Picture 1 (spheres, rainbow, N blue to C red):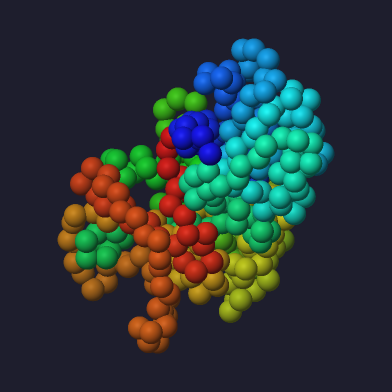
Picture 2: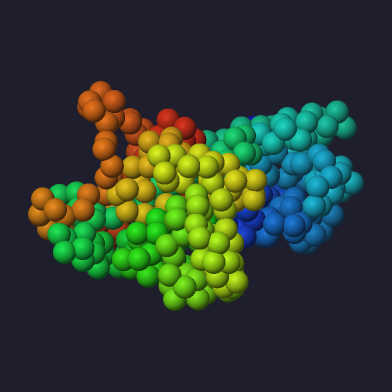
Length: 378
């Protein structure tokens, strides 16, 4: 391989990140075209339904791409979807070599794109910065292979493991840098899930408040509300026509359901699990709605239910250097818990990041992809 292959692939990864939050349920992909040591074209997948990275790079080229090398973070598609096959464009422009970061697990591609290019005489190398390319798209990789969203459970706690004081006050556990990172995470995942208890206690908007273009993306808001206790004057309900909002429930009075629907809230009726929303059924329905990733920002009860249901892939914990104490102060994970320490869920592939005075700890549960960059800002 060319010693500069990794250099150009890193650039392609940077470009891929520009599509975050706007390409779901598609993957983030970047492409760079190099000819005789010069970059002659760059592109990325900017939004779902738009041109793929390869076609954008070809459209942006400054000269003929005949004989050039294309670097692309994910295997070029070879089927007709919302857009024509990228392999078709590569062949039409007589690209001589394609360097692929990782294969696409989508059954419509899954190595077929690479095989087609090779059959037509294009030299193809696969696996340059493969781990980084897979991590860039861990949400997509999980969703396309399971049909269910990649679920990240996030919470902020004090050094002694509390998410609020015994009075219920929780503003603020973490510092400004951590809170900004939370909004960056919201901008990366297509949906956010909370319990109705959080809505009743805090009346949140659950929007993404970042400056500039990226701050304009708001995740789909989902409330786990078994018996539809959402108040009609809640901020989520009042803004449901501006930001897509769902209420997942088991049963409810018809008048209450009708009032929420009239306000713009979309209802998802789910199977019951011990009288509450079955989270496995909920994630199945979200997958069918092409919601590829979910950020859980709930309380202890919802966190425990999610872990017990086995739907969590990744955990993000913001640890603030504070001690609040109190036997009645709320922990991040409630519920009954496991009976024995040996039953505790192992979390692997952890990463530590300092955010101001806080520490961000990230790790993966067994059903996660084992990466580290779900929502790292680019």
